[in-house]
Length: 222
Image (cartoon, rainbow, N blue to C red):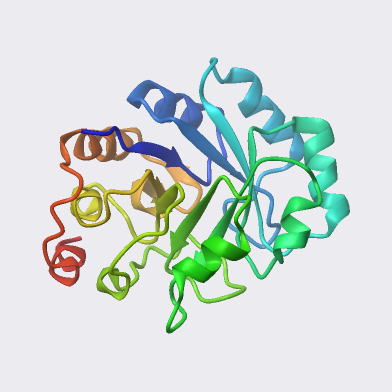
């Protein structure tokens, strides 16, 4: 059985990063979209990064940024990967010559994941979120899990409304490379809850990928 990796996104405090690390998270997400309630300044991102131990990845998240803003984060923080969450073109994503992931707005109708995988073929992976095109994630809403019969042949991260109560069902349904959570482990926007993080990680550890029961029923369980 393959191990499903976990990113805890929207980290705004060093103590929340420590809670994610202690629970066994593989990566944390730092949001650089200024309109987000989870946005961090460069100084805060630097403090969080300095507290992280080895082998925990830092992902810098952007929503339709100016190229100069992305470059400033790369120059100052040198994150392990970039995550583009808006309508960024493949050409824009790859111009920085840096590992990146592309979010797919699963809130839109008739998403063709194979076409996305082909268009963003050099991405490290696709992240499936419940937002519509150009909208931020972190809404706490799931997308229609039954809308996709098969994931593309590249690392795929399932996000959108995951929490300790439904993440195992998502893993059983999709057998993804990784799962991504933000609001589902928070006590308030941008403030993570250590116990919820531990509960989330425990649910991931106990999940069995690939059983593919009815996804709509499992989503409702959350």
